Length: 149
Image 1: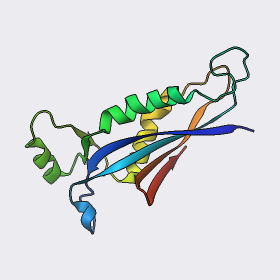
Image 2: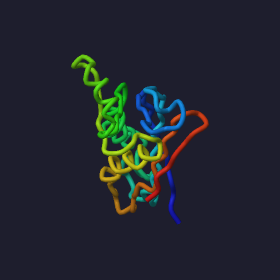
Image 3: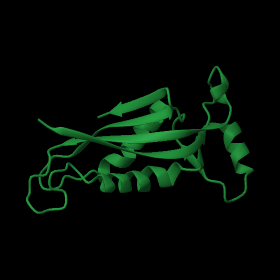
């Protein structure tokens, strides 16, 4: 039997869904929550820092901060083929943060993107078979998408 833990970070990030039938086709932003779900065995090695844990929550936070938060927080995520949005964003000053991605930035696609960013950094320590099993992205308090391994 294995144990699972979850840790999240939040970002303020803009996007648009260019072909959307309703208001999401307009540029707007969300307070996103990116939540990693990790599975493995509790560390049994006596005297180590992670004893009794899967992985220290602060280590998970560091990975989420470096590979998600610091990339998309206070940035605008734009689909590479969204010519209108890219033109508008190009007119911003050089300080504006734009992240161009090869997919339409829906919550579903951002969950897969975040999984791919984080997964290589979840390392097994002391033989406890860690693995990232899911990334959950909450776009609004009522709307969450998940990507599972």
